Structures are given as C-alpha cells and as structure tokens.
Amino acid sequence: MRCDLEPTPPNGLRHRLNEWDPIGVPDDVQDEYDCMLAPLVQRLRGGSDQAEIGEFLRHELEDHFGLPSVPSEPEVMADRLMSWWAAAGKADGIGCV
Image 1 (cartoon, helix red, strand yellow):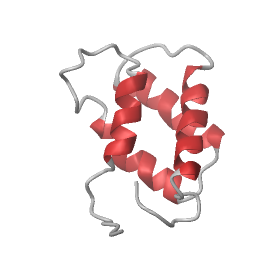
Image 2 (cartoon, rainbow, N blue to C red):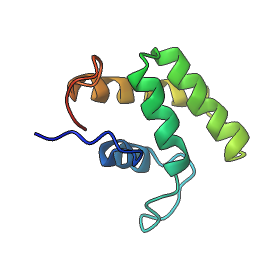
Image 3 (cartoon, helix red, strand yellow):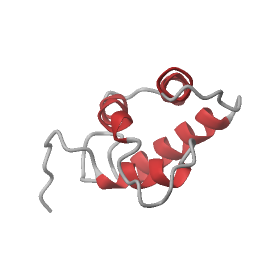
Image 4 (tube, rainbow, N blue to C red):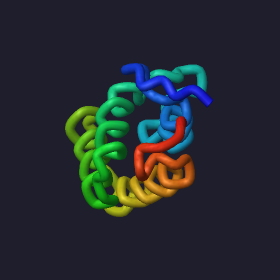
C-alpha cells in the first residue's frame, strides 16, 4: 500500500467531520470543515491527547464558526477522532488513512 504524505488532508477525516456536522450545513457542501483538516492531522500525527484535540475543536466552533459549543460535544468528537486514528494505525505514524 502506498501512503502519500501530501498536504491534501485524508478523506477519512473529512468524512468524519462531515458526519459530525456541528454547524448543520447541507450534505452537498463537502468542504465546509476543510479548514480543520490540516491542523487536526498535525495534532493527531504529533500525538496530541483528547483534551488538546477537544480544545482545538471547541476553539474552531466558537471562534472560527461563531457558534456556542455544547460543553461535551468537542470532547466526544475528539474521542471519536482519536479512536479512528488509532484504528487506522496512525497513532504510531504507520499506515495510511
């Protein structure tokens, strides 16, 4: 399997953010959360913990998108992303997503 480490973020992460869809955009808008892809990949590759990823998501919801976040929502999504990342073999930097 070939693993390209191009700046293009992985589709698996985009899919998960679109499923989460915290701002409720229509299904036909696939790139709404692309602004979070590269920073999230960097954090996941760098070994950030759930609290750090949750804080990043909370910051994006509140400061970038201008929405109040439900207290546990970013942390729940951070847990989902970390579980997905580990299952994909990315926790140790091996594998492709």
